[in-house]
Image 1 (cartoon, one colour):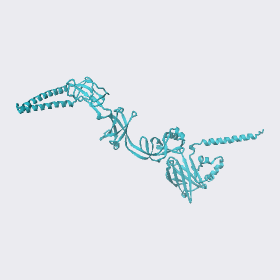
Image 2 (spheres, rainbow, N blue to C red):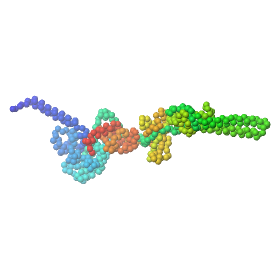
Image 3 (cartoon, rainbow, N blue to C red):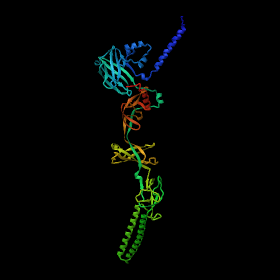
Image 4 (cartoon, helix red, strand yellow):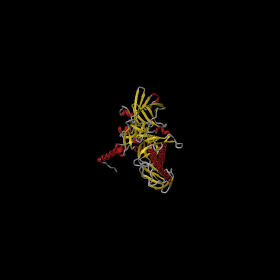
Length: 522
């Protein structure tokens, strides 16, 4: 049976085939990602026909639908050693980043009309331009049937490479662009990920030392209150934790010893009064020539001895802090606060018998406290009196600044540390004695030529890296770091001033690279 197809049907079938082919080509083209575009290669100053050479023409003949733009960006020719094949006239160069020996080097195999060129008859050098603007020049040496660079190629393997080959009187230039490991992100994606771009530049780095410490009472404003006389507690008016004023009554002690001293004072005062009266009478009689001078001198001596006796007893009472008057009784001893402060210790109770040296109260002025720092012997040269410090509480969010007021001269036999002290103002009472703190000693500030935000530095494969902005994406840039503080880190090598980098949100790029680590191996 014969089936006839009309002309209209033939036209419809042709349109469907044409549309399907175009759609398929579009899907294949748009589905290729940045990972497929590892390199773009060409020979300088040559047109398309000369650029592709014989093999390129054969490739075009095999696939007539393959356009030139697509060929350059996504389908660079591959040589027999797995490198990128670039042709300049009759000369071809296969360029490959070779890591087979463990250290990455650039290798070049040269061909003239398809025949290998011996490495010994050519001179070649390589120029690498990094995304940071750094330029590296390397010489090639012969290695069996190829040329290889004397030096290794440091990561990241993202660069523009120019291989210059001299054969006789001819000089050929082969250009290769590598974007291995590049993470492509548009400005919209960067904004959506919360990333921020900054430029590396000069900064002031504070050299600091982190040390442990503890808040303690200011011993210059802490007093241990003792009765100074033995006795029995009659009353206690101060409680633990109570704020007291200077001179405020803390407790009253009944003391027989104090009663004896006050009685002695009263007796001495009576004797002084009698001696003064006798002296005044003898003085008048002697002036009137009624009594002898000896009687007058004797009365004066008795008066002076009585004055000394009164002063002696008064000094005894003053030494124990007892008032001269009886305060309601000869035996009553009143304990008073020596200054404004808080009762931080109390060891006294009503009716208790106390000794003259018993510590019954501890009063401390908590408007200032000490931060005691444990300083290892090796760090003593960096901790000096007058150095600025920042103190942070370890159990809650609180920060204070101060200066080192004292550095101990002795090192503990067991701890091998010395004690340093910082006087802290504590008007709100938040710095409580016994609180552990972290102390940052700021020894100096230094201006460095290149620094980045500390949060921008990530660790990958045991190396410190910064993600550098290149075109429409980011590449990892290994760096050598120097001094650092809370905000910025000095870059000793690997990054130049003015280079844009991912300042905030760099962990997003690290995670993105981690996703493709199974597909990307060096």
